[in-house]
Image (cartoon, rainbow, N blue to C red; front, side, top):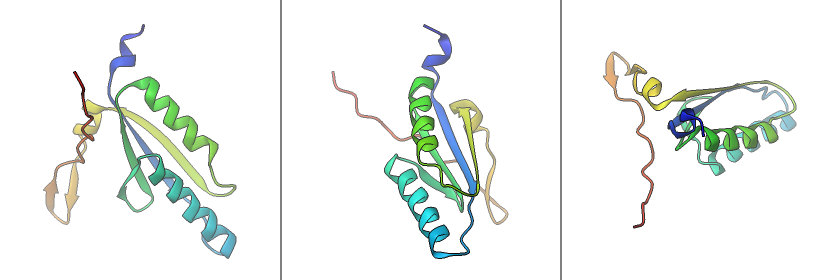
Length: 109
């Protein structure tokens, strides 16, 4: 098994979807709803992120996102390692804030 399969990953979804008509707004709302159902959290408007315990798990979630892409608009999917995500610089105004933390998973012994 590859060493990369044990790296924890973050998936970042960035999108710019049309919202001119009722059908566009419905597609936009459904896309966001599906992201939330799949465990993604809003990092900022039109940018959602999800922590994954391995590269294989990240590929499963990427496949799900690809399966419910809207018919119009731009969607970008980026995967980064936990270490790369931790190096992100986040600001609220001029005050620096820490990046989101990975969700804690229960471990049973």
